[in-house]
Amino acid sequence: MKMRKRIKKGSTWFLALTVFMSAMVISDVNAANGIDVDEDCSIHFELSGDLDKEFSELKDLEVPVKLYKVADVTVSGIYNSLEEYKGLDLEKVDSDTTAAQWEEMAQKAQEIVTETKKEPAAEVVIENGKGVAENLKTGMYLVAAEEVLSTGYAYQFTPFLISLPNNYYATSGNDDWVYDVTTSLKPEKESRLGSLIIDKTLDSFNATLGSATFVFQIEAELDGENVYSDVVSMVFDAAGTKSLTVSGIPAGAQVTVTEVYSGANYELTTAASQNVTIVADSDEAPEANAVHAAFTNTYNDGMNGNASVVNHFSVNDEGVWTVEQEFSNAGAQE
Image 1 (cartoon, rainbow, N blue to C red):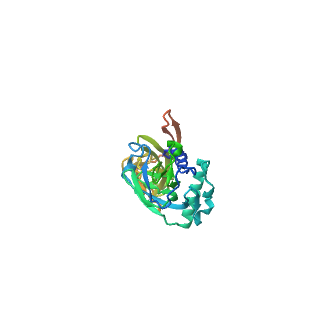
Image 2 (cartoon, rainbow, N blue to C red):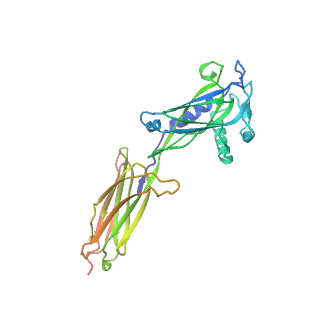
Image 3 (cartoon, rainbow, N blue to C red):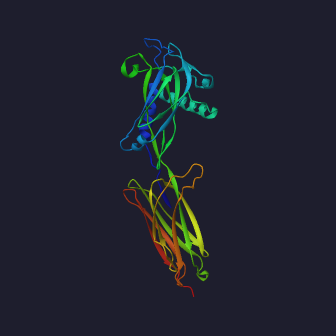
């Protein structure tokens, strides 16, 4: 029995931003002035969200953003898709195009970029929450911010389409074309996961007593919250060392591993509890960064029989799991 929580934050605001950003790229073809298609444009990027608390570490991280031009734009504000992006049907968009349709087109554009390994038209790095891409030609662009990894979290950003120049008639009532556009990037936060390896050494063994079972309780806390709880066991039929890998624990979590049962015939020669900090798994080698907790037991000359363990799990009103073990001794062996 195990309890796992993936910490994923920002989803509600992230969805709201997707709708908002999609609406922003809708150009008003009835604007009073025609577009100067030869004018250089810029995009000023700002990170949004709670940068003082929830996303505070993003201010100290670099966020790479790539811009892919997917369409030209005419003087009257009509888009002409570039050859690779003809399937987006950008020629058909108008002020009635919905946020969901804009989001779908952005996803399709991202798929095309991924499949064709298209080179970006421009790149910018967001530092201290801000960044600017300059000297951009007029047209429609796919904005694709890359995933950013910290010690404990992964930050993702949804791709979206944005028009250069843009028009804010829907929010300001002014139908002038804006060539220096400001837009926001809203992160979504997800806990990275890591692995724990329990190394167990039995330096002496009495074969007459049969196999020996050792039980370990694992509790992990992150930011004051219990994020992982589990009980695992190892069975030995001879002296030696065995290892058990426990995966899916949030990176950065403070983990306490406790040997809660050693049987009546084997005693610990190391501390009963070990404290470790989980490191995020590597994409190339998932368990290469696993942290270790080591325990050693020795035969204590006892002749008690094997025992069984029954685990009872419960959760309180705050969602914290606890486990109680009941042991029954099978009796001494003659």
